Image 1 (cartoon, rainbow, N blue to C red):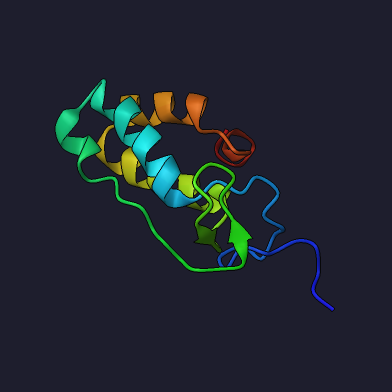
Image 2 (cartoon, rainbow, N blue to C red; image 1 turned 60 degrees about the vertical axis):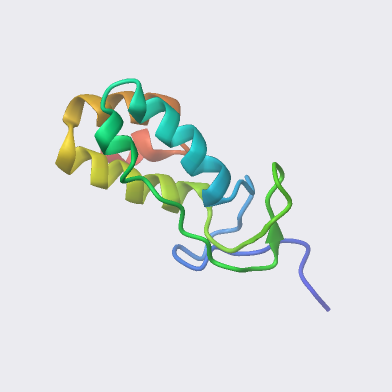
Length: 100
């Protein structure tokens, strides 16, 4: 019998907010471009096929928004701390608890 939920391949938590990295990366690029257009081009999606379906586009996914956002936040933290702070305010997914 299949479980009614699916787990993230990185953290193994239940994906309770199924938004894929393709959809998130578009929004993240737009935010970062407001501050640094070159840095925005470095944000790419991490498509990992899984059994969860993105609620925005319907693609199969296996990486939770928290793990993807965490990876992008850590990248931004190294490149531009101001952008990283703004990113954290808009793409939290529980990250503020972890990093503050």
